[in-house]
Length: 388
Image (cartoon, rainbow, N blue to C red; front, side, top):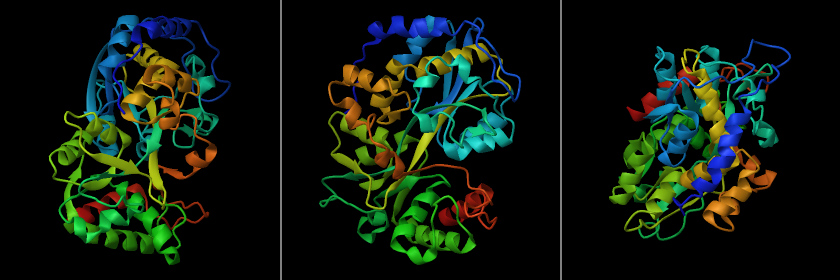
């Protein structure tokens, strides 16, 4: 359940100390590109490109007060939009909360800067597997700091969908014609590929982000049968929230954020979500600094701020996702009440983590050593084909 009552005052002293600590010089990384060795005085401004709900006043306002960096923000509806904004960026955007299907594109395009992890006070407290993941760390060089992560869930209206669904088959079921909604995003192809990997094993899909031409044809065929069922392909999370709140959609692919927001609505919308039997795709987002940022000190201050246990807990509770900072678990129980950390899988075992297939940028190189897979440009073309 979304909780908007935070212990902000109690956290400010700790967070301010974290920022102050980062003003001290830190040792540069041994090899690789030249990196900053300290965080200087803030430049007074920071422009953020993020997912909706990632730059809320609950933690932005205290950050502004502590850092002197005035925040402006722009919410993006898709990873493609984030990549476009950062590539067209002439200095108006400083940081971006990029997901795994965007990070490697931004790195390859030299749109983001390498980051000195020694300047991030809480970096040693991050989940080990997300300290240097392959979607934001290349050849040992970090191009961002992993933030939070979570699954793509199956959302449904409990009054309209009488039997709780247990399979992604529900969003391809004709009985919900005109009442289905899924993201307007080429990476949605991976969700269909994951479903087919379990229901049609003869296709040989072992990784939903590594598809050859034959496998892609099968996925596109499935998505084309789904298209007549779709009420709307949603771009912003708020779009899907409106669809469910108005009764225009009763089932679809979502994030925990939509579930939390709908349940907190007045009156509450009767919804639940689940991870179906086939598993789920998911995201792990990264804060990255624009190569053209004029406010790099404020950018480092921001990344430090949102990496602290208190803010990670705030973000996790608000959005319904899982913090990367392991110390945030205790903070979640303080802010949201006992059991909150477990509710949002902050203390989940590796088995839970391993069932989620995290977004990554499709490339021609397949995991089996072959180069017969389709890259993201082809995924974009096929998604447009699905939508007609």
